[in-house]
View 1 (tube, rainbow, N blue to C red):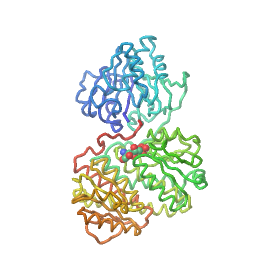
View 2: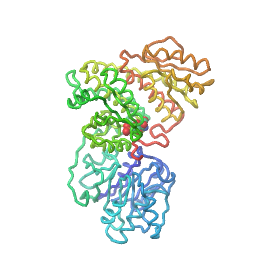
View 3: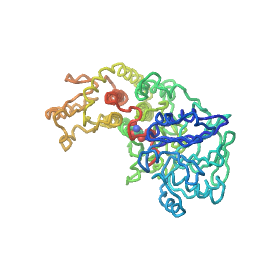
View 4: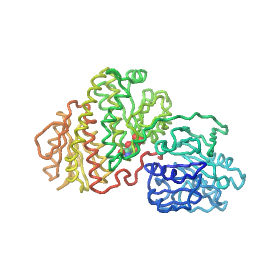
Length: 584
Ligand code: M6R
């Protein structure tokens, strides 16, 4: 959460800094600020900031920040960057400094004044305090870092050395970008690939400084040499490519994503996955999968399918609750599912697992922290996902988990053929958007909406419900059909919208549950994979029950999208959210 950028160059950087900030905005978008020879910050979006920037503002070295509030409400004062009390440092920060109150108290005693409620301003003033004593910015940085507890990605300019940017990283993402005329620090590669394709991935506790010609990286007081990586990224991915929103574009990319997975992981009708990894899964007593939000929902589907076809026990954990779980089989392999590869809850879980040799990450960002930390990382092959609501990455996560299940039982061909069927089915759904739009018009005004399903349909509905609330702000819940009568049916009253999902004959008992809510005057729409000859039914054909999550989910993603659109929501940047959750 929060995006930071700091560029130091031989030329003016205003336009590059702002462009990068726009690309970073999906990491947090409640306020934004820059330092380019002057400090400008405001509540709102980069577009609001741009209105405040005139021709007098320019520089060859500067910082930018897009905020997702943790400490202090959303207002101009709490926006970054911060200038230190004695005007010695400008600072941007992503992360949470857990001992900031203690440091603040000491600084208050020394006469420092604070204008914001943030932990970040405290860091800025601590630097200032050391600098007044030692007149050495680098030493002040090291001493400051020694005092900090918590997480940080920091970008700092010492106003006595205006062409240099100091940086430090711990438990929050930060990389360095390299070019011939300039260097920069940035929270994520994707937002800045228009500047360069050469990057240095920083590890935790590394710090240092850079100017337009040189980069110096340190670890534990010693300068270290780090190699850069050169990436080959597709320029087209970061544009909407003619679609109104990234979410819509990304849903339309799902057939291509499945094709990418086949291209990457299959050859001559065989699934080509690291044989040692597959062997480890086959030999394990149990498999553990961790994720949050949408990735957690994908993990639940993965468990269902892996258990069903391999008979291997799978445990799924919400990464954010992992420390509260009592019985965990630490000897079995762990699969970390994360689109961004930066989710803090997974990093904390990683730190709590002693044997790191069996941790594997499935991620969309192979340069991410969780990819670097894992014993091995597997590419989700979704391509950059910009919309905060995850769609195509969910499809990839589910697909990869199904793929490992089929590989474990050596039924590679079935998997490959079924994925081609999935591609055709999703294309059909994408071509019948009108009926999904029509359903959206029926439900868009719901104050509450309930998804009903049984078995795996309920797991699919958990994600359908999250997607709907996330982008349309309609309150929704997913219930097991059979559980309704045990309490939740009290919520059903005249006019309440209910969506039933039946993808398997064995879930036909849901029809009785639907009758129960209809008798209480709820409006029911049914989505099913075969024609059940009832009113308000939408049929999505699917022949293999194990692949229904891949086939039916795009329908619901589009439904959420249209509800959000009809309700005029900020679809790609829903309120209060951020694309990657890097704070606890
Ligand atoms: O990047 P990750 O997959 O680790 O992110 C996990 C969740 O934060 C994420 O899936 C979130 O729930 C999405 N906004 C859902 O659309």
